Amino acid sequence: MKFGNLGRYGYLINTEHLDEVKSGYFQHMRFAIKLSTYGLINAITGYTHAFLPFLFPNTPHRITMRQVELAEELIAALKGSIEAEDAEREKADK
Image (cartoon, rainbow, N blue to C red; front, side):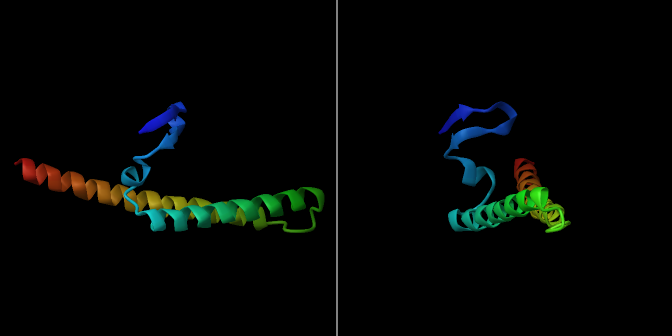
């Protein structure tokens, strides 16, 4: 079930999400908590740095880069599994 179409940004509710990202519940929860924790720390250090520029001069940037690395690793793994499934499907169709 999908509800609340946000266009290219997805849906507010998507009960097919775990299947779409080829993840189990706890694996997905671990990744989401990890990424969200980075986001929370990034917000705290970013706001602190905005008012006190001598604190955390590079921390928000480094955290953001780590979040990007994590997302890219996940996307690469997901792309690899999708390509493998497509290859198996094509082989089965022949």
